[in-house]
Length: 188
Image (cartoon, rainbow, N blue to C red; front, side, top):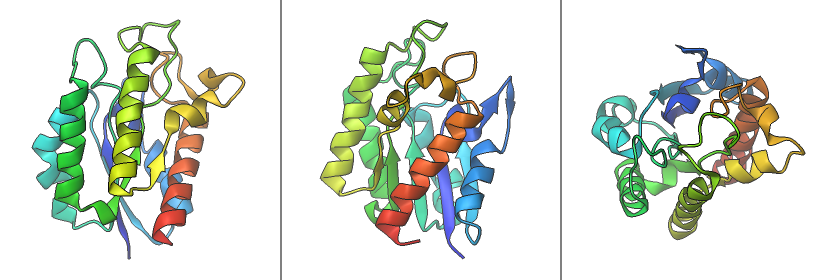
């Protein structure tokens, strides 16, 4: 049985209306019914926080695949992690996990008209560019979640009313894109 860890922040965790749900985990289980899927998403976390818990929440499971999805909080004014530090943190995660196991996801699109203006889209695009660069450098499967969302006529359909966290349609898209990247690159 394949072990897959979903490693990230509140979007990975399935945050909705102040609670954690199994939204992403359930959708990934539909794509990979024979895999053990471990959700290691924690709301509010940045790559700094992720590095502190990578041993206990990721490596201890000896996973075959790890999907890394951080960035929305790293780019936020109240939690700000510089681009250089964000890149170093992701590179350290990739090295600790082993690049052959990693799937990298870019930060998402956010609705700039709502309260999450502390994460300007222009700044999130810079963090997206870091993930794209690292995926190329390490030959990693890559999901450009921001581009996938922005390809829709109204990307806000993928978001809850808070403009940041994913709606059911957002989780459908995220799971589909992650599954595609995993199947194309890992042959799972």
